[in-house]
Length: 342
Ligand code: AQP
Image (cartoon, rainbow, N blue to C red; front, side, top):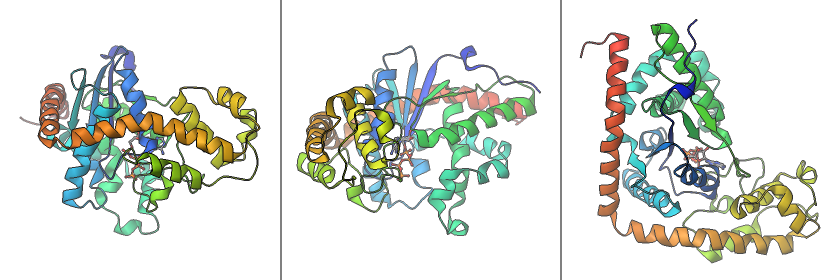
């Protein structure tokens, strides 16, 4: 079997996306956005996307989808993504994503898709009533990445399985058609908060679509709301340990310490050296103060940008043109490989 090429054979290029399926959360920021920003300064071309086609795999009110897409774009820019240095656009403006996704729907196997835990989580007990799009979501995600021949994808821990599937799709395509065309993309899952958990339940991921607003910190929350959510965050009665091992069976405590470490750019060990032995009644105000100092400038800048939707739309259409310049020849070449007359 012909092996897919090592990603080093391709131009170093980063692709990642976030769904406009609600407001940005602290989980999206620490698990993804913060890393997107630092990758701009490394030796990659960076391509970032509001994945609106992914968002509609579950019902989205049209007016809210439009507003959430613009707000998400504002969140990218306010967090430090520079549209002059990164390509920033929304997925539906680049039809090549859908074109390649169809080819990948024909490459991916039903058995692979049925193993995807995110589908099981999101479809819940009523899988028969889930959309076909939700089931095919990982094939579209593979197309998002491979339509740019992206070599690296910064994501949170929850997306690891989808990245493995992307590599499986690339390998099978290359093998079936006897080519070395798609790279084996590397996930970049780094930092103290690759899986930020709900503030109400340390076993559940912090999510934009969680029905409880108290479960998450939204990037648009004001200082009082952030402080109230942290004050009410679920914890246990014990004081904080002085070493990371002491957090092993304490998911809620571990989550708050991870959030602190990621916001402060410290290791968990360094945080525990400072706060070990303190009760939550002392640690929570420290965490609130840190979160407010880091997030308030971002939310203020988001509010300023959201008030200028024309400017956001201009940035998105320019980004879409730049994205299409990369994606179009890759789809054309894919069609040639598959044998489609064009
Ligand atoms: N809680 C989290 N901790 C760390 N990383 C996270 N990400 C999301 N939640 C966390 C990362 O953010 C990026 C964008 O995610 P997404 O919006 O495309 O989809 P998602 O993972 O399904 O995020 P949500 O907030 O849970 O959205 P909904 O509620 O609509 O499903 C990804 O890199 C993800 O890993």
